Length: 344
Image 1 (cartoon, rainbow, N blue to C red):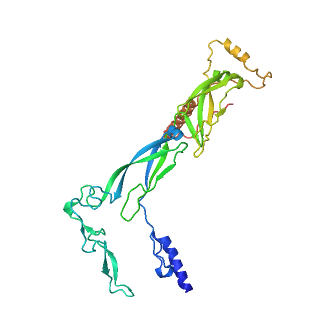
Image 2 (cartoon, rainbow, N blue to C red; image 1 turned 180 degrees about the vertical axis):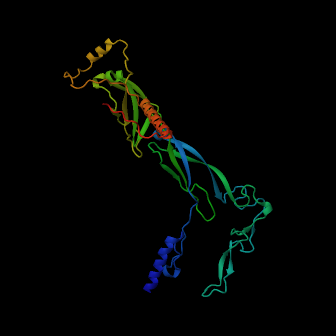
Image 3 (tube, helix red, strand yellow; image 1 turned 60 degrees about the vertical axis):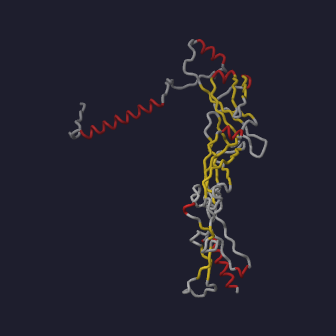
């Protein structure tokens, strides 16, 4: 008895791994009917292009979907024929299956008959005339229908987030309706960058704005204008300096809070010799904090402006000329070692 139980448990485990259907256990063992796991049609995936404004404010969209539905033809009411009643199949008597005899050559068969799928009516139990097939579904009782799904984007959703509509996909005989999945694809914004729940803005400022303060207007993603003021008494602005504005970032889902808005400043230095009058440089030097009084000691050298693109081109040209010179030397005749000139 114990060996039979373990053999059944092992077979049940192997059946759950190797088959898509659950193991058909003996009825006499557990006294329960067998249950089959229903399969679903493949999932239909779509990409939904959205903007950062959509993820900030939220948006309701309609998406057009063309899908297959079984037995939903309104023209023939799912029968497959029009203006002619379907006749009961005489082979299966309208049941879709009929009793067929088993192969007599096989031994140990308790029942001599089994239920066989009726090929004459394709398991439907009814026969339709080919001349009266429905023009909408061509007699298969399945139709291709167009529906519009309401896709709701809630504030704070992220790029790559997926929205699943269960059972809204195609239907097939013997299978459940599949799912439709939308994946959000956020377009790159011209001004804002998103980092989690925070928004980042990179703002260029001039030298006068860095020294004397500045004011600027930033248009938020919901259309509001944010006025920023930076006074000269609050310190000098420099590259890499960041400020934050609380609760002006992305909405946090399932809550009333928001992230922060971060502003990163980049100093745009003026071009050389922006003063036409040389005396103004002296006035600017006097206005700025004093330099170190101690003069550094060392060898005096001259600074020159460095153009990395021009330097790169010059080096490439030098290497090319050297390579051409080597090829010319290889083609030249060999006259032996050079003469030595000795000085007496």
